[in-house]
Length: 559
Image: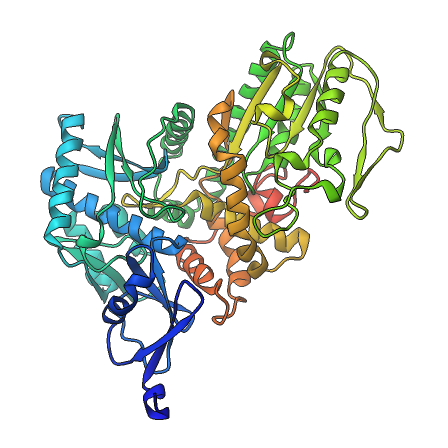
């Protein structure tokens, strides 16, 4: 290739770490067709010079391109978003007057409700899946365009999407990106695939009163995971929906209106009171079984608020006359040289075998029997346990309180009978939706919490936190999510107002990430997401709030 040809070319990074060049002046879709065989699954979008672009984009000469197939996190998100758009369109064709609500994740899929008369049935869901497959076979175009803000508001008003009208009345720009499929024009706040023919892999599962849209994951883009019923998780989402009804809203547009009307402080007080009431109810359940229970275990993913929840539960147990004694799993790490290694040959401190299970269970048994036990302290500098005379003995009205990611795993406390243990699962299961068709990812809420906490208390940048996040997520999948139904009870630590507060803390940190960094794509996505919210000042948030664990000002120690 001559120098002139090189300057008129674009460079493509392939999954096998090699690169190829091809001529410029064409769309990403055309270029992607040349290299599709190098990818394991359909290509959904691309990173061009550090910025995400859909396949209609024509990259300039000299561009560096990295395509995103369904085996990437963002590619999988685009596929799922596009499937959601297809579902909405198919439902509008079959049930023109129905209200369609995209709710939350469930059973490796997405739980949705279609409110109609008569109520949704299994036959309706089968018909809907058939219609979606017909639309896929038709390989219809999904067209993107930018329209003036007021035009978009008028269009959504005419379509009856009043939740979108409320949202866009506070929109920070003068235009809106929308997508069209047939007669449907909508905005799901992110990129879509270019044609319905790409959306080959999906299934619907009737889960009264709604359905679950199932799809492949980035870990396995060719297979739809089997549906696993999660009754406890579903029930906590239903409880959260009831909380939203108490507060009087479940979309960002209405939250923004309430904040601008000066109702933010009341929203905070009601939401915090709901949290306190639930924690008190959990303490009451434990107190009712105080004669048999000896251990309370608290588990949850990163940034779910375990530290503050544990402290607030401790106080409520004290109100019930129970004096819980905390034990840290960190003090039972094996010697550093015995720590299991991960797939990158690095110490895996989140592995269950990183804990000395034999010693831990021996100490638990002896404590439950009323014996005196010398508890070790783990020295993180030397990587060894030390015994410094820290001896404890449980009294009659005491039980052990154990917080850690393995709390739901029976192997952690296998020497203790199940009837003597009470397991609590805590996570930030976001109830608020951007609008009726666009959910807020629970993982995004937790990531924002962690970005802010890591900056406030650990000296990490947003870039550091986002870079570590995939590893954190892999550990959660392995150690926590698969066991969540083992819990005796679940607690949702999300606060319906929190993203309006987190916005002002997170935005300056995210803006520091350079476009030259791979993590810039996530930063830009989060910034666009946060732009939906009218900010809410934090001064009315009580000092025992779970949110204080992340933004500062907590009355409890923050780990």
